[in-house]
Amino acid sequence: MLFINSFLFCGTICLIAQIILDNTKLTPGHITSLFVVIGAFLDSFSLYDLIIKYVGGGALVPITSFGHSLVHGALAKTNGYGLMGIFMGMFDLTASGITAAIIFSFIFSLIFKPKN
Amino acid sequence: MEDKLYKKIADSHKPKETKLKNLIIAFVVGGLIGCFGEIIIEIMCSFFHKSRAQAQVFMSVFFIFIASLLTSLGFFDKLVNKCKCGLLIPITGFAHSMTSAALDYRKEGLIYGIGSNIFKLAGSVILYGVVSTWLFGMIRYFIGGVL
Image (spheres, each protein chain N blue to C red):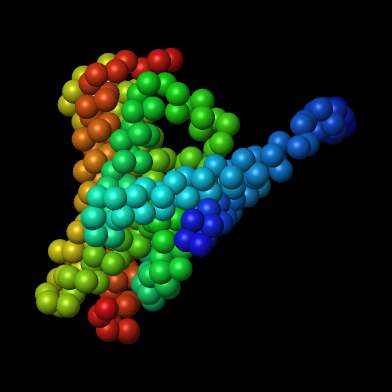
């Protein structure tokens, strides 16, 4: 059941993005930034956690989950550190994704040459 | 008058199905990537006995690796031109933007080329993510209490 939910949820997110891309003048850069902000907004009231509970991995693949993990890490740190926890825990959960993207893109850009 | 005529002729020659076709392709490709992510998590959980949190990290790193590799091999740009948002909205789009920026500016050197341009496209995602998180986090902290 989680597989079907994943398919439907991730597909719907991409469908909405495609509708915005086709019908407005926004570029993909605008849309990804917008979706990150939407993900952060949804998680600030724990809605995204609910979605993850019912959808599973499909909710963690779209870029909205980036905003979700930013908020989640920041709020988790406020437990012990108060207001400063927002600054300390910001990248706690997204660190793996950002680090992987930096390392792989650096290594591959050294190894390979641009094709066109 | 000529402008209107030109627009009329140009509109009549525009392919009409592309919008619907784009939507279907984006839905199916995005859905398949989401489903594949869930499959990876399930495989890691059941065959390698990892916890779900570890499996989620593995899944996102795996997608980033594949997207970076395909981008640097040159396949991914063609795929993105066909599937558009189906590949840009999942985490693969983030890795794609970073790798393509690194490859494009590589000839300008390691520091002023790769170093200063690698976040050229992905930087906006991080910037607005952090700013909005700070804002929403403050609101949540003062209104709703902690998690």
